[in-house]
Length: 348
Picture 1 (tube, rainbow, N blue to C red):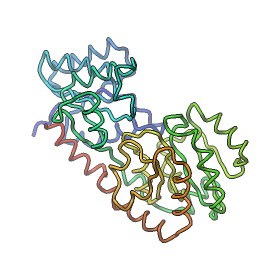
Picture 2: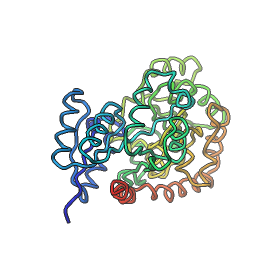
Picture 3: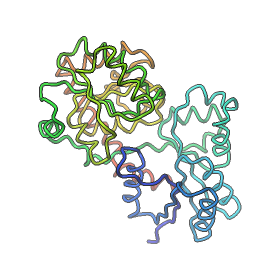
């Protein structure tokens, strides 16, 4: 059977980073068994990208899937309206109240145009879909929910002893892995308060923090100021090939974000069998089971988040229950299952 042609406008594949982009390109390799995929790198200049979008449409790509780029979505929408076809715009970023007053923020004007001109907005959770619909007054049938995915085989829990040995972490430590970019939006400024409350209750705790983001220098100094430096290890940015090792070495994953569209690292923690704690931000609760909802705290309530972390780490039966529940829940987001969903989506 002849494969459907689809053009993807994507960020550059950077396998050396821990960004979502690696997972996207990995996913496209998977679905290329069923789809004829052409990719354009958004690193090219705007004129070149418009040219290649037009050329590929004229070569038979009637469906164009744009990942986050506002300008490319507008280009693709123009091309498909003139020459026929359909433009899919993937966007799943939580701006909170900014969306409700987007006209006040020039940085969101292009987003509003992209949302209005595309044929289909693709986003990760129902919460995000509702946020876009209400803020930008989009027709409900224009929004399609397409969750993120995880390659479970890369994150299957293997041997904590080996992971700890590779990272030179003693086996008796309670390791809390902190992986988001250290920025305001990801809640890095809340980390000292959270860490202090955990350190007071959890013996032998070790905070393992990936040092990447605009607040990394500030956080390093702040942790020394509050005398947590002996309980903290900063590590340089982690590549995709190393991420599973860090999850395997951890006892808990901590995500203090103010906003999350679809937090892929929580899926990675689940796949590894590591419980997590997070703020109930954006679409986070949509991807969890009922049992896992107890791992969420109200946004900004650092004491509550720390209390949940303390409870999980101090009660081995609860830890085991959440570990097993994560492994069950993450199967819904396996690359195999989401591949089928994607093929159905682009057949729409």
